[in-house]
Image (tube, one colour):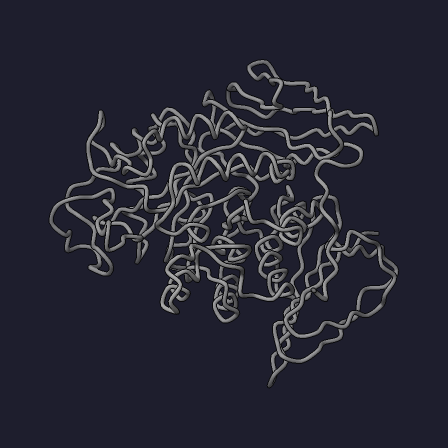
Length: 482
């Protein structure tokens, strides 16, 4: 049980509600793919007023391309219980992607190195069937452990035997209305190898280039960025997680230019140690970037990731976000090694080790601090608590707000066993959202503003309380409007 009350998610009940982002970007004359997310009782009918060049099919997938410019797109959804209409802004300009933070799935915490093509397809089908897609989750991203050897038409990294038809996999993901992501590195060898499959090739080959750090696997003298970007575009990928340390702008830009030369939009995430010294590059060229440890479901690690955010506040803007890494929630593979060491080699996954309130903090961090939100759990084992956590439309609306205002730390109390952090975000509708994180070991009491409407976003209820008392390891999120 949790202290923070969270509303029940029911994606296929009630009157229709459309959950498109208020602003959406793409490059001129590049193929677009945008599934219209709609909650509500089925059947639901969706119609759209589209600019010339776009069309919508019976699966509510908008596709086509547009020349440079700004457009409006109006969508209407109707069912037996009502009607909803939403108008969004389309901004079409070169390299103008993921204007609001990515919402989707990534494979690493869910599957680690065991990930297969069938895991990815099963996950995409479950995102569709469960209703996750109806809240705006739209990316299905494959992390490391897909790599085989160099070869093929482009002399690029080819998939290993766990991915017998990677183009077919991407086609099926697209047919469901999702975008597909892939993982690579400029190092000669990627992270994620195992004893059985130790060598996962990266985008450089040959002797180590002594101009770059020898940390991890080193960067090679032979650069293959263009070949690999061409291969990913040919397979149909829409997003790249590019992973190495120390993460430098020179090698990042070699891949960035290769992606820009591709015949389709491929969003670019730089990770894992993008230094603050090079912030001007990351915020201009990456849809998101990381400078933190990998997530896992332990409290101290969650707090390390939380601590990484504040130095980056002034660099966040529309289409450019600091990444707090994939979620560590739900049933996942992160504690498999511990379980195997304890004598259970048959176990492939396990429940999250964080308490329910700590999981709410973990999700609130990503949502409120304008991070990409990437679910990374085994969706076939998803329970109602996780569904409620992932699918609160009022919390997600803060993450996807068109103003793209960074959350600012407005108050911190840290003394002995007490630690309270309060963040505030301005919103496009003129309101303000405030998150109260009690990450200490003592209860905290906070005063709410008076003479304004106060909305508890997790509970999806208006509240009249003038104070909130937060037990240790809990969070509350409110919205103030006049």
